[in-house]
Length: 248
Image 1: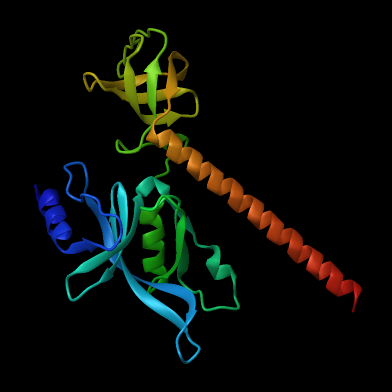
Image 2: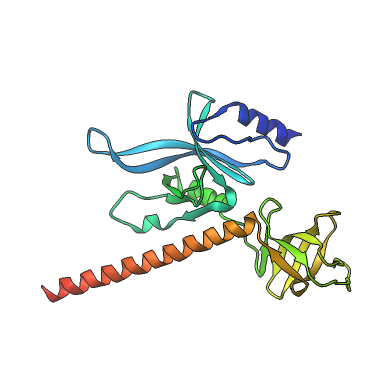
C-alpha cells in the first residue's frame, strides 16, 4: 500500500513533455530518485559549457528523465524501459576535459524508439557510484538472475518429471517465466498457468521470442557497435602517432 501511495504521489507531480505513459501500477515501485547535472557541448554567451540539472526517477522497470518545474513539480523529457539502459563510466579517462564524477547514460530505445544519450555528472564519487550501481543490471556469481518484469520465457518441448525437492515437473506446451539460469544448464522458472515455481533442465524447453529477447538483441547490437567504434578509434590513433613520428 505504501508503494502504491508513493507512486500516486509521484505521478501527480509529473507532466510529460514527451510521449506519456501511466506510472501507477501494482507491479512498479521507486528504486532511486535524485538530481544530477547534464553536461553538453553547447556554450553560453561567455563561451562556457552549459550545465543543466536533470532529475532522475528510477523505478524497478522504468527510468524517467525529468527537469524541475517549480519546487515540487517535474516535466518528463525522456523515458525508457529499465532493461534498455546502458552505463559507461569511462568518460573520466579523458583528462583534457572536466569529466570528474561523470558517467554516460544511454537509453537504447526511448519514447521515440531511438537511442539517446546524456553525459551526467554527480556531486561526488560516492553519488556517482551509487547511481551506476542502481542503473546497472543485477549480477550473481555463476547465475543469471532475471526480474519478473524482464525475463525470458520458455515452452516445454518434452515432459519432465521432478526428481529432487525444489524441481518442477513439466508437461509439453507448458510456458514458464525464467527467474534464474545457471551455468550448468538448469533453469528456475514460474509456470504461467498455475504460478508453480521450481527448477528444471534447459534441454526440456525452448526459448520463446518475447519483448525480453528483443531487448536483449538490441543490447547485443549496441555492444557490438561500441566495440567496433573503440577498435576503429584505437586504429586511427595508432595511425596518427605513426605518421607524426615519421615526419618529425
